[in-house]
Length: 297
Image: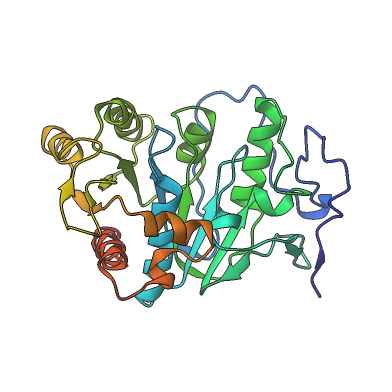
């Protein structure tokens, strides 16, 4: 019988166990001065794992990630999403989910489910949506380690990791601890976003990381006026497409700048399930199909 993880009023400030998981099945500890790179592990009962990254904040990466997970599910795959942004988790809002996860008998976190996909996020473990995570690096990495290795996914064809912005500790921990099937880079066409996107691309291609880059998604590519139909490239024209040509990676697809995608996300009903028949949802479905072919779903 599963049971509640913990009371949200509990103080979780424990460096060794920041999520407050019972100790009987805690994940293996990493030596603080471990030499060399940690050994990569497969996530149990998960066939494929992809990372969705942007390196730059504010480019719509989380919205892309959750719509991709939902698109995989609509393609008939058992899909899940893991929110690896400890400080700014978005998945609870995007999936309209809240509440504390329960535990299995062997003290594994049970994902929360909506719209046919399983999900886990630090946001489910906070007392409220306004509660800050004021942790230093060690606790953040411990919490991430627990989210990566202490969730009972119960059999998935594909798990989408929604990475936080940047190319720091979280990205390195994931790429060095988990066998990833590939990475997807999200960017707007704007030069200032592309300047960071190229750093994310270089991280995954680094020989010490060695994660295949499946391609890039150009988000907010064009705004189409709903009144007159005029097309405006608010963030520039075809910037991601040019980068793909220069770097030899595939452009997986374009997602337009559309207020309805934002509205769908804010109401917790992402476009793929909120408006499944329109062109915006079809864009996500097409990107997911191309990714699925690349990773062998």
